[in-house]
Image 1 (cartoon, rainbow, N blue to C red):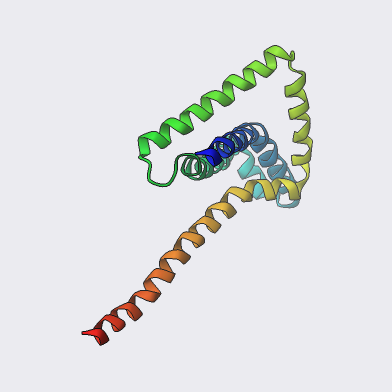
Image 2: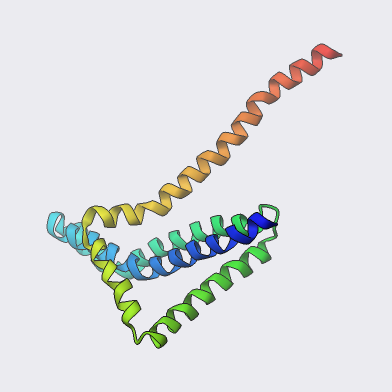
Length: 168
């Protein structure tokens, strides 16, 4: 219990920062990539530019999916129900909007302006590409990690069966 008292606020803080960042920076990163494609590959760039909202939604959804898949099990443990995980993600989202509105109200938008000033980094093509690919890399790594555990167990199963056959 003592460890979770310190770790849970850390997870909540990281989750909140990521929830805010995907909302603020995804559109800037998507626009940066599409604008660079308009210059280097005009036909594809113009096609993507006409679908900017859809691309932004898919990229933002990837962040939400990763956060909603990773954060609740870290906070609640692996054996929690879907409804509990949904409530945790809903609360995190709700808290992020409350804190964002509170920062605007309390600091007259100065803090939000400082956060928005970080969006300039996402106008760098390589940073934008890295940011948009990061949730997919995380999903891929988590999938490989979970499959690796399954593969290890299934690979040891035939040996266990053979050992049991020898004993009988």
